[in-house]
Length: 327
Ligand SMILES: [Zn+2]
Image (cartoon, rainbow, N blue to C red; front, side, top):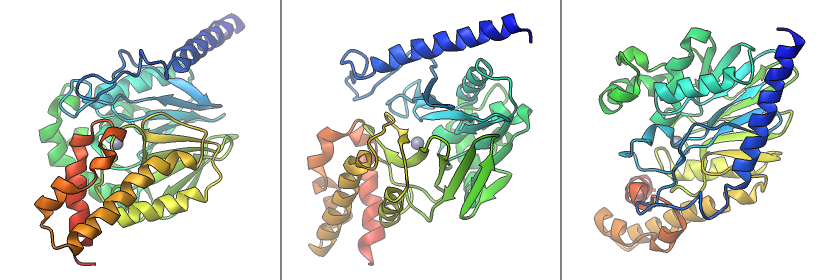
């Protein structure tokens, strides 16, 4: 590419970044982040912003699973090195994956060497198919391959329309490289540290830390605004959060909700909610309540603090009840 071409592209990128910053700086304005009657927050078009140097984020919307935008609820993005690109989660459909892919190609021509999934949930993995032609290594927690196999038929049945024009079980792409404890990836002038956790939010949680900018992609180990959903172990999640607190982090990108430099205080709201679940469920069991009774009584003090509270709160209590019943 000649200099003029390079200049045009860098000018375009600059304009995009400035426009994004303007949009982002408006993100706390009451007009954009107003929840609708279902307690949801929506965006209208695919946007990606450089939140820290080389870390590009597309922020998901807060809507219910039955909303047409259910495939765009997770925070996804990519990290740009001097040699290649690492994608962090791919969204809840092949369509969102393609939009992320296009966004990457509007910013760089470098190869995509890694597609990293933070865990198995549909909103983070179903866009993987959009990256297959780039021939990256697909990377996840050591438990992710089994988790994908266990969910393959379910994904095909529940998310048929999100799996591209020819949906089949092959449309769900799992990892070909897994992480048991930690793994370092070199993107050229930038090292990523991947860390795998024992069962916490899910059975296969992985975080990605960009060592250059101390940016942590926390996956669903951290929810903000949207009610946290438990699909693993409450006690495991709380201990994963204790481990995270010890990390040297300048900027954190949660799995859902706005990113932040307020580390580790940004985890406090979630910690209060999870500790409430632990304490009140323990108390309900000690008082001899049945699970149905516990579900009616636990956690109403938290209701106003979280969006889409009704979508997960009750199932969270039932999971915690089962986890704590025999302790
Ligand atoms: Zn998620």
